Length: 126
Image (cartoon, rainbow, N blue to C red; front, side, top):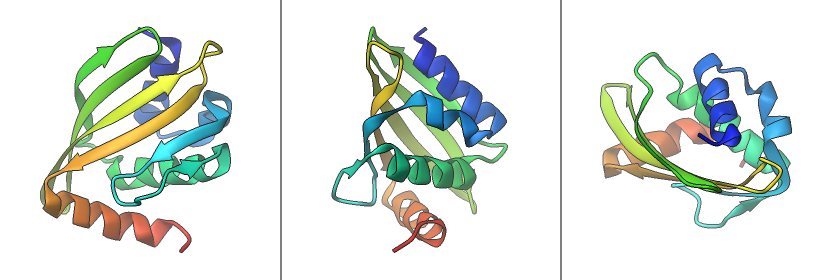
């Protein structure tokens, strides 16, 4: 498995987001399931991923399937938040230095998207 994915799993498992600084490329692009424009740069991507780790990061969160290639991966996850089962995928791409250059999150069902939007909005600046 790619080192970038191993490091991402460590961050998710331990909820120690300090490792994001080394894991993310400066020009990383983050695609949120609730924001229509790509978020570009390490600072904004870190903000989104820290919020996501807090919102999703409870004892029910788990990756249920992974497809890993040479420079990208799709990680399917499940989590229960406020009684709602959230199902989604993290689509992650990294460069030759093992730094994440693209992170895209897709979530279903609509009820889960609305809940995630509400909870993430509380953690992120407007």
